[in-house]
Length: 194
Image (cartoon, rainbow, N blue to C red; front, side):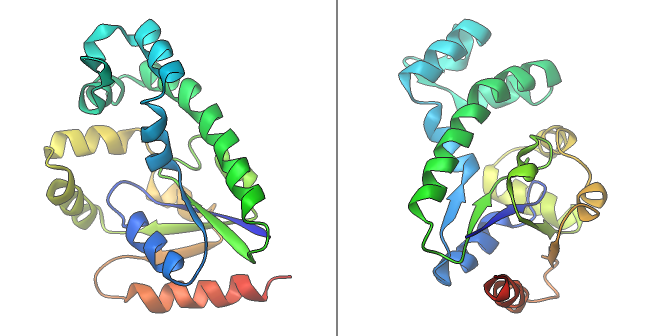
């Protein structure tokens, strides 16, 4: 089984590309989604309370927007959050891989694959790229946040150019090149790897 990382900066279209791979029968682990679920576990809530205080909670639940506002403009606090969440995601990912061994390849979708050092766990990396203006528009439309917040989140990610040099495959999500043919080409290459 080939382990494939799928990444791209905010608003590039990772989720859309992941859905296309999923429609081809390829198992996809959504690291960011799983990390959000982990925020609701008692053990994680306890650690978050200890590290960040009661202000990030809305009664008994983690207010993800407050937490995001706190960590995305403070690299040290983001590092603390990642130190709590990343080991749990890694453990859950290994469980996922072990359950999917009968597939030719599996994908993990994650925004900060390179930044977290998780890229070392994969045989191949697919990078989704997009024009910055287009990616920003997607996030503004999707997340109901301001352009300043988009830039704060983007500032915690490596540049697209840096990631291009590290990726095995590039999918351009620029609204000119169709996504499905690009995905199918990569799918065929991955199926041919023994």
